[in-house]
Image (cartoon, rainbow, N blue to C red; front, side, top):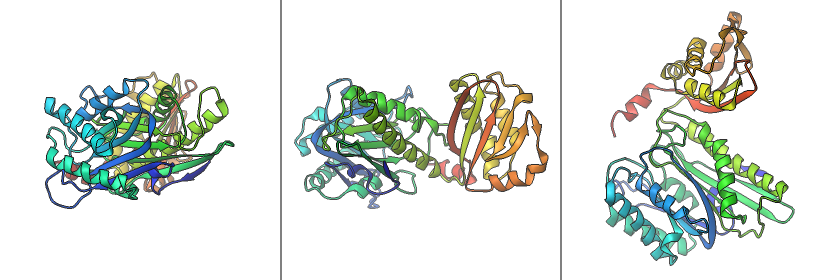
Length: 406
């Protein structure tokens, strides 16, 4: 498997095209790209994972309804930034459907063959006259096979500071397959999942049920392991499209090939997830929380999330303060039955606690480690075989200033 950390992402697999244009969703006339299309002329099998928030945006509800058909195939995804089309009532639902049907009309495909995504401010209706004009322009670029991979990446951004993409190629012995992905997301990030749109394409062939199972597994090992600020969004979507242009079919009964495909998909998802955390709104630190020795994996995940979402812990990271007491306090209110006298803790590989006893002689090393841009914290409860890992970051003064008003 060959891994490429940046690049065009979605158009690396054969037969996929992208476009990204400015249609002035926010009405600011700033020229920002804010509407994009992913397209394959060959119909794609598909799978998706959406937010678990009880309040779901109109495009999430619309796309979920299309995916209820287990035999569904899709040609395109239409996505806009600048407006989430969430909490917009019947008008929002009608607008999501209009986005899908208008894209289908322009691309000359069936209206149930286009998925819809939106991201941006909640509670504001879409400017549909500008949206439909943008769909027309983006569709013209798509049908003209314009190289719009980078433009699409820019069109889905909100508070992100950069585009995020990656891809892998896998030599299967039957031919080469590719998996490409892009993601947007920098704030309101907390599983499951986040204010995040992720799009993944592959030129492998696979049935919908297989894609659904394997995508859920990959998301659990990636996008559901990140937290920036503990807020769960209304619009989170991860969509996987498989057009089969490679001629290589992935099926569950071929375990070797299926495992190779899964490893590629997981690598793409994990890379994109970490890019979200590292580009979190106004963050300065990327921190990996490793919890070991719980009774179950679920307990370990609970402890990791308590630590990762603690405002006191995140603030200390911003101040480069190795305040291990705050970390242990957060682990304690996960209420998994930890015993302090059994806990081992490390900053990177440097011991902080050994069976509950602080190793004060290492204090200068702790400070040096938490002053870095990236570091790991490992907490071993020594109670069992459960473990989990979460990727998170700090909380800065700039985050508050940035989010105090939209």
